[in-house]
Length: 157
Image 1 (cartoon, rainbow, N blue to C red):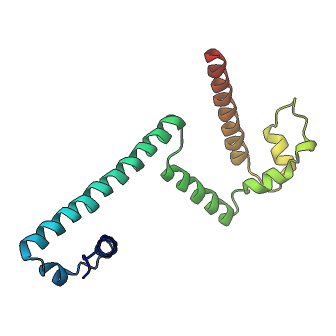
Image 2: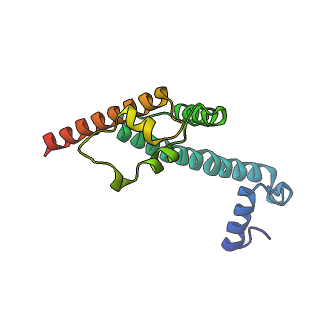
């Protein structure tokens, strides 16, 4: 009865896809026919469609990876950085980035003059020189990278 009409057959195929094979119902048509139909269905659905899904995912992944460039952080390096910052806050050897941002309201700083280590040590309570140096170094590197990207874009235009 499950394959008597196209609608019932489609419903039954969906049930098979979800794991309810119903081998006994298929054997009514004959063992060989049931095996042939089931094996073809499994190959088509599980292997071909799964490979298509993986191909789509890998294609998207490669496009995204290509667009972000070589200097992008990996998931592991980002995880380590989050862990290192968290440990520093727990041990009170670091100040959170939010606390640093709150110490410098946008209207409070003259954008023509760069922020220095003494500026950070004066405005941000508890920041150590090592953290201030690392933070300013990373900001400088990011600014240099952004400037190079802008120059590359102007060359194209």
